Length: 317
Image (spheres, rainbow, N blue to C red):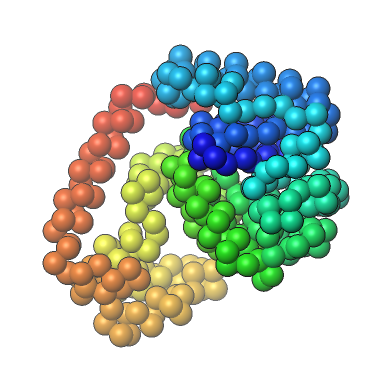
């Protein structure tokens, strides 16, 4: 990324973390905020934070030197974006603030500069209303803490060009992170899934079925234990889609509407596509790969348990 000029507008916790990611990957990154003083203060905070991460073994030994070389605090938004090929907006989740910021960005940026928003909740199409040349605008949603979470949502609106999507994915990929492209719908994908889990968990506690502590224990030691390695479709394929369909029927005895069998699942079962045991399911893993998949799964879970034991319990109490 050494030839790339990038700007991050919004230098707080999320924006600062994104700037660290880009600068550590080699890009020249301008950091901007509502004032030069705030941008400079957060620049200094990021260097101090980097020293702490290096000492903890979380950043490479030369991280702070790389940040000093590649990251700089701009006097204002206009200076930050003037020469940038990619601009990441990371200001607070308030539509009026984002509109005002994106309007300034698009007016001052190169006409071909890609503009991404780190919004986690606001419609990309709504944000695009104030962007000049909106075909170069999309959501590029990092997760907190940005330096350490490897996944990034890429969210085009209907008017985003395919070239913009591919360019944004390329830039993010050059930092070592993984991208997933999703449609511009309420909650996108990440938060839709995250809040669905929290919604059920909250109801379990409200109904007195289990305590918050016990719910957390079950999630992190059972299906949550699998999630660093496999997403929900891979897990379902390995369990057997016919098993999933049966479990849905059992859940429907208590929650007939909330756990109606998904149409896409029933169609797979009716077609005899039951997952890895038939060689076809959601991910169509060939049957001759099942043994290798099971071996990887078992090795991964043992390694995860060893890591947890090495780290010890989280300091929640």
